Length: 446
Image (cartoon, rainbow, N blue to C red; front, side, top):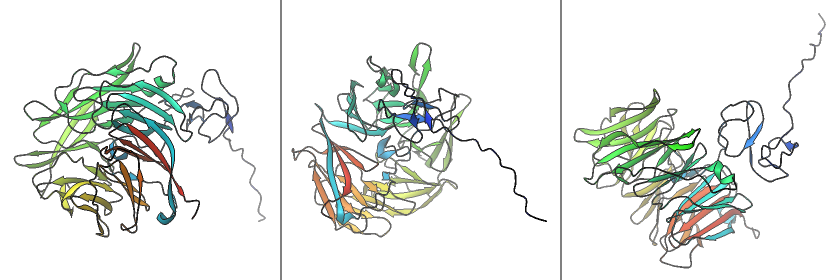
């Protein structure tokens, strides 16, 4: 029987141009897959369902009300994101020997730079006194300056279009969409919290999770939620989810959707807690950790990779793994650990009292200069360290004996106080208020 061609079937096509969503522009020929309107230059977010364009901080599509996804590649919280891995996943394809760091931005705060985040195309920098500045990436045009908090004591966090900043006993939240208005940004203050904030917070959805310590030294995990109402943004009173003696910082599970994890050490042993949304609130489910070592060090926030959680224990400062499926201790990776970053289940870097060590190859390198803060890993390229002398040092991932260094502050006593890495940029803040951004590129002389 001869082959008979099938009748042609009309395939719906996606319009190649759309209407700019910003009032005053409304350019009607925005090409598909571009990050910004070519006429007004403002960033847009495309709905995956109806393809309509929305403003950059929109959470729901203005055309079909479908939930909008956040852009990939954010550096949105402490150690990069809710998993706390300290990993920049983007591969630059530049050999370390040909790497050059080109300065692209210099800014100065009056006080220490405390928080650096990259979210929806903006670098959000905040000083300890609450002064904040947003810069467009990659043009580095100043987008907005505002007072975002009375004080900032830890790294902030971004999620669902909100910027959260922790003070000593209070948090503020700024809906980032309000930065686009001509009026002052809408900064909402929490009530005074029932304890001191002791770890960088975790933002997840429209909620923030915090560990507090009261005057008696007892710990508690609390949550707050930002809700849009007809009268504006409302911040819920703090809800205590758990009280304990020695709580780790919260971390998002990288294997279980929408589950927040934390550890608590009780007299009978270590407990792993899962926090899940339930009936409009949150429930906590404890589970003993089998064969866990004693002496959780809660001052070092845990991290997750796949079905494993990583935390540091006892006087030997042992970096250990916990299998989240079986709730069982899964081995020790290193000792004398001051901080760490992870590049996989078996791979990462730990900072020790005298230097650092790669977990996969057990390569060690002595670092003579005092280190400030946890390391970052640029996948397959470098380990990034902030130093206490105002410098940043990059070590080759393939060979720790190869390094390059940049001076950020001219004050040798001004430690690096914040780091953020995104796309092909490294942002650095110091204790004397310097904010500097460098582009990682191939050297022109290579």
